[in-house]
Image 1 (cartoon, helix red, strand yellow):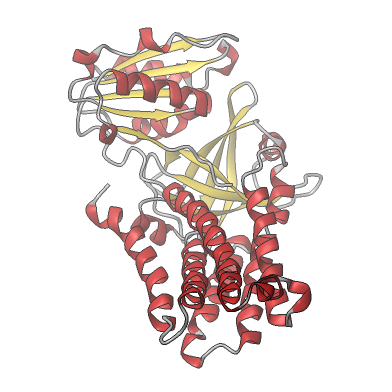
Image 2 (tube, one colour):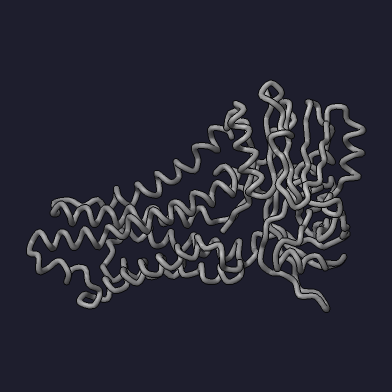
Amino acid sequence: MSPRRHLALPLAAVILVGLPVFWAFPEDLAFWRSVAIVCGWLGWGLLLVSLLLMIRESWLAEWMGGLERMYRWHHRSGTLAYLVLLLHPLALSVDAWSEAPSLAWPALSPLRNSLAVQLGWASLLAMMLGLALAFSRALAYDKWRWLHLSLAAAVVLAILHLVYLGLDDWLLWVPAAAIALMLWRFLRSDSGQAAHPYVVTRVDHPAHALIEVSLRPLATAITARPGQFVLAAFADAPSWKGFGEYHPFSLSRIGKDGEIAMGIKALGDCTTRLQHVQCGFAARVQGPFGAFLADAGATPGLWVAGGIGITPFLALLRARPLTQPTRLIYLYRESADAAYIGELNEIAAGQDSLSLVALATGASDPDIERLIPDPSGLAGCDCYLCGPPGLLDSVIGILAARGVAASRIHFERFDFR
């Protein structure tokens, strides 16, 4: 990652957190009341960071080091905002206690205070609910997505809290920025205004419960490179119920005429339904996103793919020949799951620089340690991994134990909850 991309995100966070505190920093107030005010505006700054990082714009993701990195910081800043904002009413209660212990609870209780205080507590409760749901893995995605809106409700309640407190005019930019960022996400991403219209031109079945969908642009095409992914949604068609929500899919081919292809494995409700997509169906595509494989091929490489994780590597192999020795380890459950295996064998046969190891693992876990080269064979290698989380964790641990620096291990987890 370039220094610019590495520093852009933390720099934006420092600015958004620091400006509200700078403008609203209390003067000539008691210590604990000052702490309460600082905590409140620190929390607001962290909320702005979280709202900025939920925006899905390809240019912004490029600047911030990738969409996956943005989502990690989005989760952390949102959680930290909640914890800091919890200190706000507690500090106010301590301030009241310093005057008289009997005043501590009335200062904290929402039942014995103004509407502004009640709105503040309602915002904290909505944020607590939203965070609990954000880290839930048991909920189906569609239910999780709608319940996750409680975080937006928390921000709206927090804005009303500020309004009823009588916010100074020069601080109105803070709630205005929060509203603008939420509207930006809703209109540009969730409503699809930032998406490009495409049409399905071909559907192949390279393996069991897996399709490769080719899409042709109907207007301006996205400009993508191998290793990137897109967010795609498919419209309803006669006798077929589409899927209007945007889901991430790795690109398996990038055509010169703007056509793209992506592999879709039946892993859930959405991807199972998409196994029945047909030519002529309409789709909308956002992106591209990601920097995976951006520098692949410049040095000797080790590639490890598990299942549908083969698609970004295939996109690169289809785009250009390799110039550096590369070992590709491709793992799949059964022979019926070996997507693109015939094409991969042909590519490997035609390129001396590519060494392909394809292995059916069955129901048991593969012996990864036997497949990974020893430390001498990994010297100078950049390692690229794509597959299930368990496989990634195993390979990362083995590579680290064999002396591969973290900067030479590249992967993306596609975890956007």
